[in-house]
Image (cartoon, rainbow, N blue to C red; front, side, top):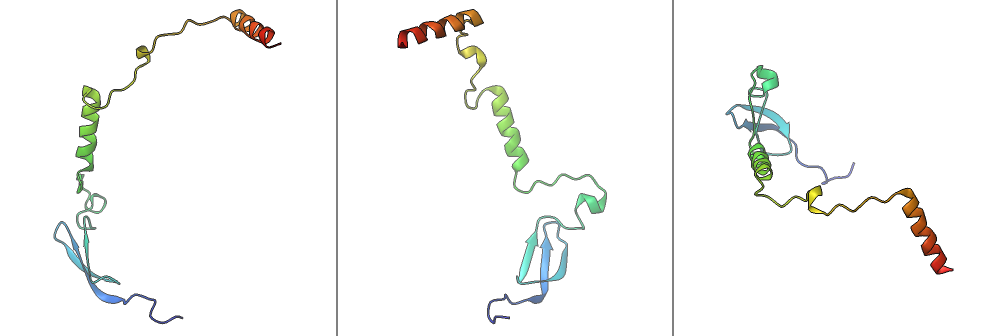
Length: 104
């Protein structure tokens, strides 16, 4: 095993949750801060609780609201382009025949 390449292991690392709970564990870090732990996680507590630390849901709702109100970027609609008249298969084949005759 090579020497001086492995991090120093600390057996008494203090983990602090945003809910206030703390516990000790082993880690190469001196102190760890977490957003959610087993004391406040809905799976362990049985309570339905919404956890959004970084405001991602609010950001998504704002974007969704802007899109529905039309305040965001202009979205292209199919009605913006003029509809080209549809050609029949006979017309398409005649056009190809004329094009081939012109090249010969």
